[in-house]
Each structure stands twice: as C-alpha cells, then as structure tokens.
Length: 463
Ligand code: DMJ
Image 1 (tube, protein in one colour):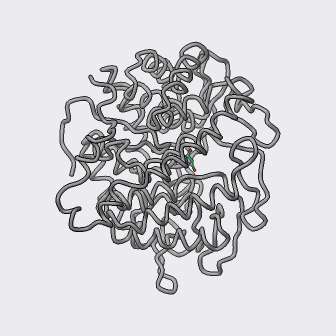
Image 2 (cartoon, protein in one colour; image 1 turned 30 degrees about the horizontal axis):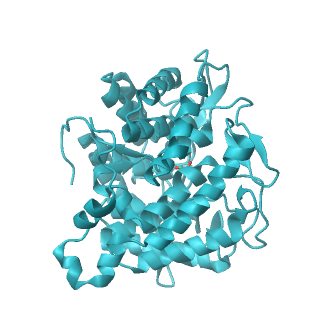
C-alpha cells in the first residue's frame, strides 16, 4: 500500500482539478482550486491552537485555553487532541509537528487502563484518528494501537440485542449504560469496519454492522427513529425524531458505509429512511428549508428547532446526490449563523429565539460548505467559507488557543477547546480553501473528519 497516495500536492493537483471546462468558467476554476491565501491563514490559526496545546497541555486530552491548563476526560490521558489532530497536521503539511505527535502517540498512548470510556466518542475520535493516521503515514504502530483499542471496545457490543452499551471499561471489559441513542449505536461501522478490512479480522465489522442494523430495525412504521433507546430491551425510551444530536450521524453512516464498503444493506437502509426524513422532518418556513423535530410514530411536529449539529445534514444530502436540498438547507444554516455572527447550539427557526446559545467550536457548517463547494464548484461557497472563518477567528480566538463560547449573544468565552476543533473545524476550513490537499472522491470522512480510504478490494462499487 502507498500510505499517502490520496494526498494531492502542487502541480499534480492543479492538473487533476483543472479540466478544460474550467477554462471557460474562471469562477468555477477558482472554486476548484480554493484560495491559497486563505488556506495559509487557516494553517496559521490552526498552529496557534496546536502550539498552545503543545505548550500547556502536551500529553493530556485537551487544553483549557483560558486558564492554560490541561484537561483529561477520564482523569488519565488518552491523548484525545494528539490523536484527533494527527491527520490535520499531515494534511496541512506540518511534517515536524506530525512526526513529533506520532512519537508521542507511539510512546505514551496506553489503553490498558481501568477506566469506563464512552464507546461512541472513543471510536469516532481515537479509533478513527488512529486508522486515518495509519493510512496517511503508513506508521504500523498506529494500526497496532487501533487494533488494541478495537479489541478493548468489543465487549461493549455484548448486550442481548447487540446494541452497544454506552460505556466499556478498557481494562476489564465490563460495561455500563443501557440508555443510548441511534447516533451512539449506529455511528461505529466506518471505524470498526475499516479495522476489519485492515487487519483481516471480520469481528469488528460484524459487531458494528449488527448494531447499525439493530438500530435500523427499530425504525417506526412511518420510517423514523427516536432519540433514546434501551440497549438491553431494544425499546424506545424517547420518540423524538430529528437529524440533530443523538441521531445525526446514524443517518450519515447509513450512506457512508455504502460509500466506503459498498455494503448494499447500508444503501437499502438509507433508501428506506431518507424519504421519511424529508417528509416529516423537513419544514418550510417563509420560503426557507429547515429540518425540525417530529414524533417518530405519528410524524406530528414536536419542535421547530435546528442547531449547530444539524448543520452537517447538507453535507450528507450533497454526498448522497441531493445537492438541491443541500444548498437550500445550507442557506438556512448561514441564516442561523448570521443572526449573531456565530451559530448557536440550538435555534427555534420559527420564532428565531435561541434556546441554547453556546458555541462549542463545532465544524458541521464548515463541513457542509466544503462538500457543497466540491459538488457545485460554485464560488459562493468559497465566499461563505471566508465569512465563516472571519467570524470564527474574531470571536473564538483566545490569547492561548481557541475557546468555545458560553453565548453567541454575549460572545463570552468558555474555557474549553474540544479536540474536534482541531480534528474537524480547522481541517474542513483548510480543505475548503486547499481542496487539492486531499482527493475527496478517494476517501470517506468518518463523523470526526478522519478520511478513510478503501485500500481493500471492493465487493461492490457505489456511485
Ligand atoms: C464531533 O465529535 C462529531 O462530528 C460528532 O458526530 C458530532 N459532534 C462533534 C462535533 O460537533
């Protein structure tokens, strides 16, 4: 395997991305080649976040950027930021920093710890990060860590239904947490499946796929899933349906497991699910398209709320071929962002009131901008990216890193810099302005923006 053959650089990229048609449409050509000046700015700002993590929290999970103190999720470090940020460092061409990061991971990342970890978060951030880091660098040590982690997470799936428990102890394999949701039970297959393909051991794929299928099997008669289910009884405990937190990436993985693995069951589950999402969750208000909440059994509207997390949905719509809805929904996401100059966690799109005003440095709106630019070559998405990044720097840059906001109304900062800011937010900004850095069509991003590449023989070729 050539580890980094899906990286694109320099002239080669320009040739690949500049077909003759672009010569007749200079704006489209510019969209396809991004903006080197903006990419350089993003890299500088990413380095501001990374070097402050390096200075004040090296070896810990995360930096608290206001107090300049480290934070570990479970009292002991699992190197959340170093693992989550590794492929961003590689894609930005920051070789010295990436090499140093890899050595830290190789020397210090130890999963043999008596702690209960959240299966979903550890899978998307660490398993995903290790696998993409391995594919980008060819460093076998990362694959071995991923396999060790995968083995330690497997007991999570040992419930009567096959739906994973929320927490698993990395040392003992004991489990906890029976109340889960589709995002947590159904957003595992890209990572576990890739681990199977790279190690030749089917167990990971099989367990994660069963969890996804068991989630799907609980779809209501009208085709929706709720936001809470018990992994032991398999019964719903909360029937609120949406594309928001708790459900979001379940839909994302239905399409993406088809895209990455060519698994026809995934395509069939997506095809059977998306019509109900578009029928019951989509909502037209004053000519704008939103996706709100409805009861999974009746389809009755329960809330007209949309937020920072929902803003991933244009990306998935575009990826699955529905660029029309994707573009309209992205315009609504921008409306949400522009109300205060940064998007809130949740907006009531009918009243324009804000039930949750925080901003966690989330990436979804940028992710969708990147996907839409890729599929449309419309330069308005470059302009959108410029505006988003301008606001992001203005309000979230702190003296020692990037900080979440307590409120997008007051713009008061919060002492937190989640690892996904480095794994996702900065990465999507960078790729938007430097699309030639990665061959979009050769990879499938996991929900934490870790690009995974099908290096194995495909059983079927989607799209
Ligand atoms: C990330 O951990 C992932 O993108 C997840 O799917 C949703 N939440 C955060 C980013 O907002």
